[in-house]
Image (cartoon, rainbow, N blue to C red; front, side):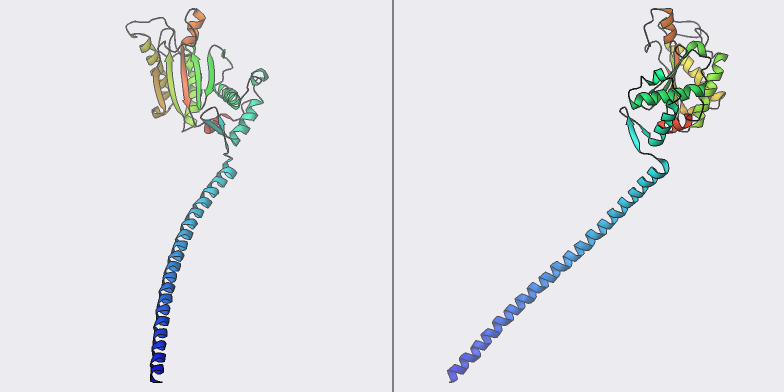
Length: 278
């Protein structure tokens, strides 16, 4: 009987110790699970906070894009390799093209061709070329975002001279009006000569003549037409970028020219030139 009682007490003690160990193990496991749950919750809250920040940035950009699209109609299309124009500019361009010579319009095969025609039409109207022979005296072209006006030397200078002729006043006034009307425009004036050499007391060679002619135009634009000199660049090309050979009198006349290179924001420039001028 005594032995049985001792055995029973021993069994109870053993069972109690095992149960306590299991309880402690479960407590430990429960603590670890709670710790992992806490970490997961913190990580979840951190991710939600980051997602909220990203979402707000996306909403901000979407709002900005929507505002630009709705208010300014600035969905852009590529023209050539680098230029882009907005839908608003394309509408202005189409309106202008209705006034362009149908024969010239039929030759426009691409968006770039059409933009070239439209800008040339508006710019020529602004400069008022009604009294000029446009094939020989003035040519306007656009290449990507650069507008180029080529003016024969007989419109600007006396033969072999860098003194500006009074004949140039009208065209330089028109050019100054364009430059002064648009802050984004910068202008490079390039002097070009034919291949015949020139040398006298005032002019050393063709390089000298081409530079002097460019600086004469720049000075006149600055001093008489109030063009900001920070927007002007004077450049001399001598005879090394001819339009054609110098074998005839007519070809040499084509090569003697001043090129006005306008570097604008094309949308702003087109808006500037798109007023109804007929």
